[in-house]
Amino acid sequence: MSINKCFFVRSTLVRYKIDIGNLEILNLNKLYSANKFLDRRYQAYDQQTGEVLPKASFKGLFAENITFRPKAISSRMKITKVDELMKSIFDDFLRLEDNGRVAAILHQVGADSLALLLQARRAGKNISQEEMVTAMTVAYNKLGECAEKFIKKRFLL
Image (cartoon, rainbow, N blue to C red; front, side):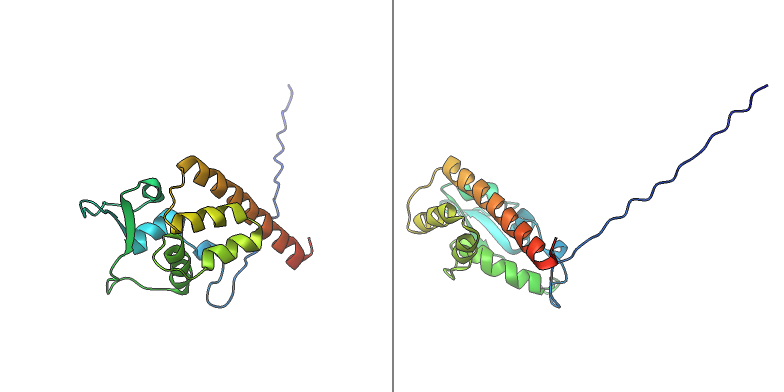
């Protein structure tokens, strides 16, 4: 008669989480996704008919007749420092206010092609969706590289 022995090995994975923030915005997890913030603070509407779309999203950014305007703030909505930070960037990106925030960020990370396209769009030139998506993809990658460099430099990794 044989006896089978069974051994269980328990492994523990050690993880480290680094949060980047300040006293007002504790970490990057507090930031909303772009479409969620857009829907939270803006209305998308058809310029020709005036019809308000049920949900604002960046898909409307490429439609010629769709534009955005800020939503009225309800008494139930709590405005945080994250809202204030993101609103100034979104207002500039959506051409509601020309405060230079988006161009400054893009130039800082080396995404000048998107900055030039956004400047041309602000001047009234038509930019193709393909051109815009390509420039946004490049800018996204450069922002990621910049964030990675910042973390490595800041935490000496």
